[in-house]
Image 1 (cartoon, rainbow, N blue to C red):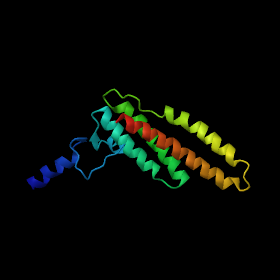
Image 2: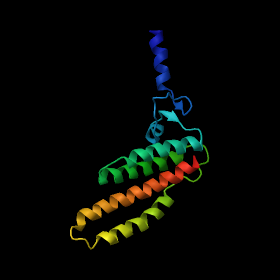
Image 3: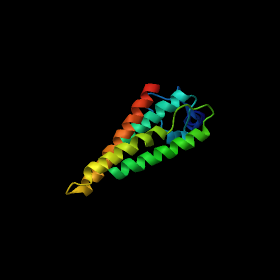
Image 4: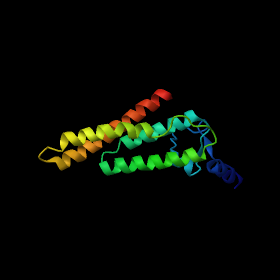
Length: 142
């Protein structure tokens, strides 16, 4: 009985980035659910980059947009909870990069005969381009 009690205690403790096992991949949502603890700006950036890559893997436009909004919401909640100074981690540049790409693709596809599907595809590609640029800039900082 004692063995089971002590072995279960380790599962209920917050793990830190350094304590996680190789097969464990924590997300910002896991941090918000108190499954582990972020201790530095670098750990936060790495976790955010992994979460952003998961969003980029979404094929459906709705899932891509929904995944982005969930990630943005999670990031804002995490930034409110961490106890260290966070530098250069927001979506300001993302929105600046998205606007011209989105407007250009809409302009190019607005005159096409079957423009509804082309416009949806261009929105998806514009969003993907802006997210990839965000990831590229983030990975330069890590």
